[in-house]
Amino acid sequence: MPTRTARTAWNGSLETGSGQVELTSSKVGTYDVSFPKRAADDAGGTTSPEELIAAAHSSCFAMQLSALIAQAGGTPQSLEVTADVSLGPDPAGGFRLTGIALKVVGEVEGLDEAGFVQAADDAKAGCPVSKALTGVEITLDASLA
Image 1 (cartoon, rainbow, N blue to C red):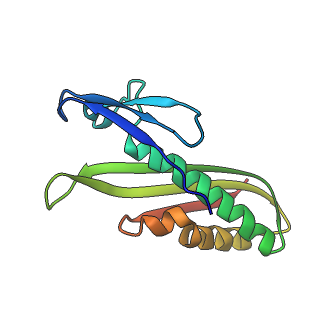
Image 2 (image 1 turned 180 degrees about the horizontal axis):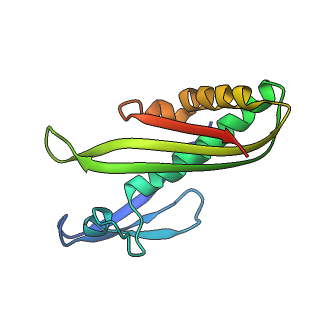
């Protein structure tokens, strides 16, 4: 299996510095990052580790769910997945991810709501990104369109 690479170039201190994260393997882009914008409600045109984790988690979950729907005898027509990744204070000091909320609405042939929800629960547990984030509470809201 392949290894994927990203690179960050950072200049300055945490409070006043900034950087650029490059998606090296895919070459799809370089994106600005800064701690003040990471900690603000408005990202102001920059990304953050939390947004990148949300992108990784939502896409991994969608792939895993589409496979599990097929294994259960269904045919996925469309899956709309969002991942909300929250950053907050760590009681031990600094910051930590305080939760991830996955939401999926699916259009699926051949599975009822219960079968879809079961496949979604299994995808949440089995997707490699979920496995990597076991120290973070992950919630799931799954429904058919």
